[in-house]
Length: 500
Image 1 (cartoon, rainbow, N blue to C red):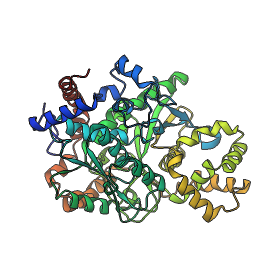
Image 2: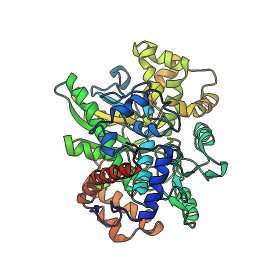
Image 3: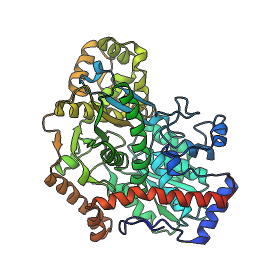
Image 4: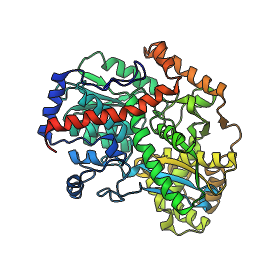
């Protein structure tokens, strides 16, 4: 079952039968049955026996059944499943634009409360079922700026192998507290220099770790199962949410999908939505490090979005907009949205009840950035009441309490006043569009594509022919279509495990 599309895409076939048998035995001993991507996308049913057993499983436990919750369809308590993924249509009194802005909530995912456990599952499971990873010998190394490596450690633990998190030392305290609870050994948490902007330093550490044949590097920035899983699963979830919105507004059209780039996995859902609805795709990045906007550099604190390079799995030649957002805005809105006094004053200012803003619990810093960018795009395009803008909240506010406290000590030692609310809404939620948004002409797309050369060919050893293969949209169709072939291999693997 080879996958078309060039040397960057793993062939969907068993490459080592002995290693695969070792993985089968490990799965059998741990009671692991693997969901297919079709099941995680909601296009194939989860067996009723699995759903019944899930009711008694803690969503935050390292239980094999939690692999079946690695999808967008979890209920609010994360124990059951629902037909329409959790989402919120933001109040227009908050957004200030006519276009409905719809936010999918990644906090419903199991174990890590963030949707990055989906690409982590995709990355390791495709290695698992194809005989590329021996859980009794190999260690899975997860380079990340926070959520992906947490998802990787969770999946590794369930599948019975060691997981190693590699992330910048300056990430939020809550990320490290989670890792300390889940890592099997303190040495499996590797802190690299810097913060959100220091992805190159993560790569350098991974090059060092790769000198050992026992370490398998699962790099979300270059692993195409990340793209594939989001195309198939996050894209399908967005379609299901849009169908629900359109049921209430028959004239609705899915005008835009807005996503911070990060590893460029999530934004792959935009490719599926463009294919289905002609939706335009907007990438979000920090103004303090305007990589796609200005081929630039810098440092910022919009945790979870990465920068200073163009991920190998980003289909930039299909991109329509780039929108910059300041970390000054996201940090301050995180404080306003998540302190009791700030939220109460915000509700009063918007004419809402406090509980009508409870959805803010499910929106972390990168989600705030996506909302600001969605508002900017709606203004720039003069979108109307039938032009739906869809975006993602990767995780919830609880992962950023320490960041909120730091801003409070530095800027709001006396709490938030009504004047502060007005100022924060005007200057942060409604950032000036100005030159922070560009429409991607053919020339701009080529510029951003070419920018990736310096990371992937000059630094990371990708061949020029493989790098250039990504110019053709047929390459990306092959990357997405691989999900069907992987499902066949997962099904065969489960049959050999014999626990169905």
